[in-house]
Image (cartoon, rainbow, N blue to C red; front, side, top):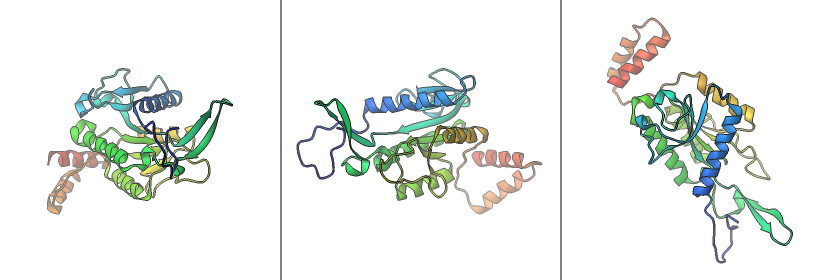
Length: 255
């Protein structure tokens, strides 16, 4: 038993819901899943990869990286997507030694422990990693960052997820568990898709392909309206919308 039922007051000896063993298992599970759905001649799925140029080193490697090169130490332009995995046990089971069977004790609603996607410390740590990547180097500006879980986000975190997606810090909180509760429905998505529950492999593949096809660019800054107007005016001299956008981004980065 991993979680103790709510109201239990006896002696406890409990495996944490997300320790090193569970972390490694869930990361490998994600690696295997992505390997099965993405074309192997185009993408390499790396666990515990390093991207030193954007601050992802051996001290704090990326959980999962989709890359175009098969190596543990990557350059930013070889990285298609970074995943932070925040999965934990969402059901509790008990083994009966006399019958040799396993029976369900309950889902995460009935236990004292909470899954990673419902805990503020876990969510804030993942957000912190996203911010650290974004501010590390301009070379990180084109790399999508997704936080993977297996439980729904709360109302408060959904609003934060929508804001962070809109700001470009992350590109989404994705849950890969279509049935986190054995009885009852859970949230499918947040208002602005900062959180999305993937209900099947096809949906996950579609979302990944959408990210790969977009030429995303993260940008941020704090300027007064006059200075922004000047940058827009300069960028507007370019002939195409794409060149106008790129010019504005370059001006903003250099301002």
